Length: 40
Length: 486
Image (cartoon, rainbow over all chains, first blue to last red; front, side, top):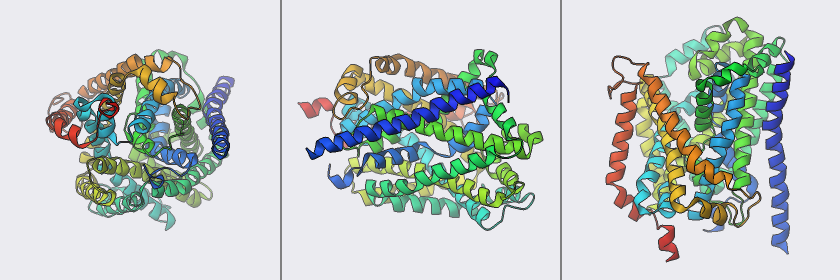
């Protein structure tokens, strides 16, 4: 695999998978906050 | 809305909506289209359109469902007014017409899963023989009925039934695709597949075809603009967010496509690199049902991976079929029917209207082509209806309103007011223009299977009928936002 293809793979996979995982964490965090507020 | 008619948790909403978005298109179309359109260059355009088409439209759909708490027709009436019921009707009709033949596709997946489980695909030429003796024959009626029956059994129990099934199927599907991708990447020679998928051809980015193919892939496989996200958003809790969920579904769907692309192309390049052009050019069904079993059969331990592949495909198809059944059912519920009678009417329509696609591949391909173009029109209708409600009002009152986790700026207004309509019109014109070459002598003939005429004819009939029924649809599907506030 060439360097360009490797860099491209890291960029695309990083953006798509990294984006998904970070959004999932953000949603979980916000859900936790909303639940805590609901219990108050 | 009672609590029994809400998703019990945010996780439930996310997995159900991901199940809707992830379908066979992620597994059988994305790898093929990426490979035949410049690999890395296509991926750049595909990521760009995630932000320029899919996510903005998903935000519209989530906000329509959350605000109106009505299905496709009722939501259009609520957001845009009674005069726009026909547009909601078109969205519902388009998704239902796809459901009719998608049940047949789900049935094919079940049949091949059964064959993989019983070892019926491991011999040379067995996949081709099974496909030839099954698709387009009365045998596929049985699996069409089975797929529809399973889908109906899930929707029968309402949103809680959909949520329970999605919570099992979607994590399992993700795990199976991950295992298949890891296995494919670790095969000797797999790096050629990765290189093929990720090597960019920067000059290719100057070609409009790559951009239009990338936009089409976003329009067809993320579920944005189909009315399905709107349907699930009806059951969101009031404190639920819109924009973060939309981004999450868009990224989640594309994550699965990327895994599928890596899995398919690494398997192809590791097992049979000399046939890659034939495999990629074999079409959705050829790649999935004829070539993939042959490749798995030639792989060490391939029988297990073949079962995983067809199980993943079956799960992806079934969860999308469930969403389509719920969409049509919800429209009838809004018109005054109880859930179960409404579902039985939808099931009966699916059973009958899916039969021609089960019995004839030519009819199946015609429907796939016509309603594929219809989906682009659906996306345009969503943008128009959102504009009628007021884009800034929708952004401030609903998207950035109660429960918002990710405030959205004015960029989204520009996307829906200008970018999405331009994209939808460009796509429709481009596909129709391209179709002139498929049937040069009879390109306008309304009864030919794959040409311009059949699209114009069927969509025109649908629009005329819906416009004639507009008053009825508008009066039976709820009230507009103005009437409610008055």
